[in-house]
Image (cartoon, rainbow over all chains, first blue to last red; front, side):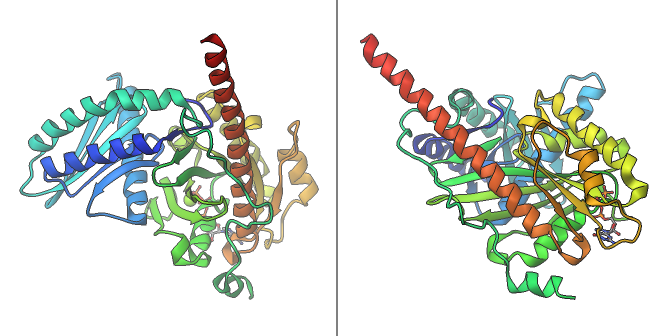
Length: 169
Length: 215
Ligand SMILES: Nc1nc2c(ncn2[C@@H]2O[C@H](COP(=O)(O)OP(=O)(O)OP(=O)(O)O)[C@@H](O)[C@H]2O)c(=O)[nH]1
Ligand SMILES: [Mg+2]
């Protein structure tokens, strides 16, 4: 993958989201995410929404990376999947096309067996698409007309009352 | 590694706060969390030891409208500064778009600053990234303390690459200089992204022209 970045076209984004929806329904999962190895979200389905998805994604990417590294240090050469089971909820993370992860958050009565079964099917389906995404870079065919403009005077994060209060002592 | 979703009209950037032990990386994120309105940020997550030392990373998601027609998401991470966690720092750096190097201005920490700076270069090199090519800025923190090095000294120690990078003085505990650092970092990263995108569009159009003239 290029160091500077990659992108998803509208069609690719829709294809990933519908694959996530299908997995969510079939595995009766709570939330399903497709993320990259650094924690950016490509698509999701399920009950979680908003910034908490960013947190779940960052922690899942981190958890997978740490376990993967651990296995490498132990001479195992890297795990393909990790599974954490709590009292009520479980989380299953599986790598796809090396650079990406599928994250499934599930609760009883769904079982890990069911999740693994349907996740395997989804992974098989989206692998070719994700392999393609890796190679197309930042400006995929069909999106050439989209340009990005940065207002030179725009301040990404403006000063707020809270900031003035925090710094005025 | 920026990521664009044309479907969601979102661009995601990853920023990492790097630096020596106890330089104030976690404090930067804590104060940003405090001063940025809840509509532009999520909750902060800290993976730390009982003594408040970062063990794996801290995480704070932010979003801005600085690029027209898209939501720009900035995922802020810190690394653990303690030397033993170098593998962990390498993992957190994976896919980084910009680094805020938080230096400790105290005289006693000069060696720690330069060690950490070298460690940053080494860790990036394992992913074939050179710091020269990666948008980054310097933040000279703890300017409120008595035994601190003057700015020109810190610049001499840390800002001696071919291209000078922007630097900021800060007192993270009071929130001074942290928003300025973030904004400068965010702008550099977005400018880089827009430039790379234009170059790639040029290539795509060239490819299409070739395809047409071949036919
Ligand atoms: N006086 C002063 N103290 C600061 C400043 N910034 C941070 N500190 C203090 O320095 C200590 C360490 O700050 P942290 O933000 O935890 O440092 P860190 O870089 O995240 O440390 P590690 O995670 O262990 O690498 C805390 O006690 C902070 O309150 C500053 O600008 N001035
Ligand atoms: Mg810390």
